[in-house]
Length: 394
Image (cartoon, rainbow, N blue to C red; front, side, top):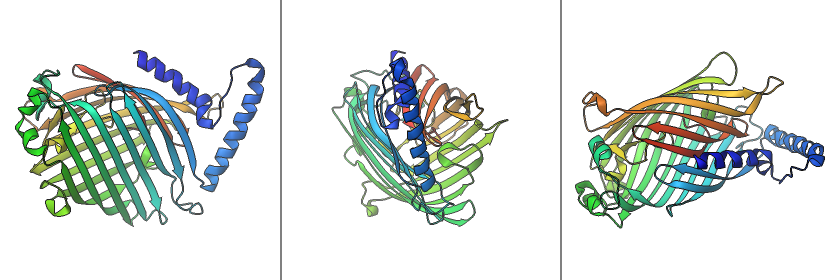
């Protein structure tokens, strides 16, 4: 819990000064000057937003996850309009973070969500990199649940990266077709005895690169995709991986993602839910198995502990933005969620007791309009974790 209190303290430091681009002092005699400066800064920032100019908010904060333990992250949230004169497009966002953890891991993340050509074209992209001491339990629920986590049974070092650009063209209001490229690489080293006994690991660790090309159909009526308060998304994609595209393995991956958001009662009170599945077939490496328990779904589980060819989860989240005394929405909000999911080989109806339950609470601080830094605390079956990320989980 000490990491939670440390994080909250730094969050309020960020809110009071750092994200505004200057340091502040707490001497009471300077309170009025600070308020005047803050008002001017807010006015300048709002003018930039109205003009579609780029805004960059830096961030430094600690965090904690089950697999990474304590960490310190530095980064920035950039937002901009690709065409400042175009009133039909939303502001694009581009958060970047680099983190170092108490386990000696190094991580880097960058996520682009952008809008172009009167919203006829959307370009999204994810880049993630990890070089970290890690654990590999094996494939299937039983391996994830029953294998003891230790230096002799699950420990190894993992170097992993992913680059996933996605292009969407709007053919009709809310309807998009597109394609995605997906390049991933998972390479293990310094394996423990238990990891070296896994057949999938032994076979595919020498074939780390996967290159895929996919087609996408999407319906998206959400008001703000990074912070939906009404509307829904349905995304279906098929991605084909092949040595002909430069990779080492041949398999296919189907995913569907359904998200819905409703405003309840007043603005800032939102009920959102997500149903997502990922299904694979072919020569699927251990690093590309469908996994559950990431910072974007069942928060609280160790990322990578539960993996298999198929995955399905349902997540329901309530989001509540606190109001100011003048009845306007503040920069502070809270969430709570309930979820359940499962990894499986073929038949999802087998072994109902192998569903993974999940619940949690979270805090959001609005850094820019409808763009957040978030802290989540999730619990699951014999596990828990804290998470530090940008924007909503889904």
